[in-house]
Image (cartoon, rainbow, N blue to C red; front, top):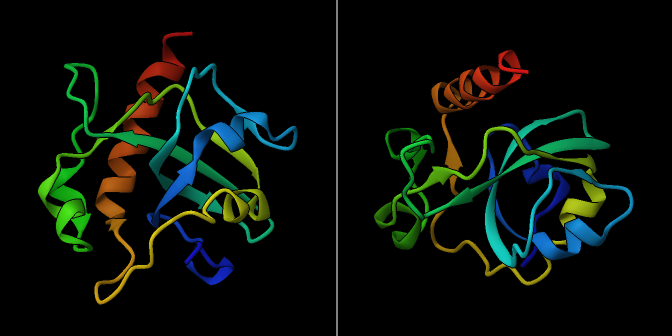
Length: 135
């Protein structure tokens, strides 16, 4: 079951087809290679447009660990570490493009859609700000 427009909100996590987003001419994105089906977190939305960040389970000293801000979802979501992949690179564009890229996502039942708390979203924004000051 894919992401619905009602579920697109700040902090929501969805499994999106990153490669479809890279090919979508309406989506602005950082310089990414192969992405595949991966978790993304919604940074912001105004309904018609939204901004998403790629998450990863791969540790790196430079990546922000998000585990302390995970809102319960599936067992897999809760048991695997989640990191912000790259605080310098976001995906932005029409919310409908993000919804379309979620068509292969598994349904979230009986648990709720995973998400990151507001405190975690503020931590992500602070992480992004570190890199914007270095330019």
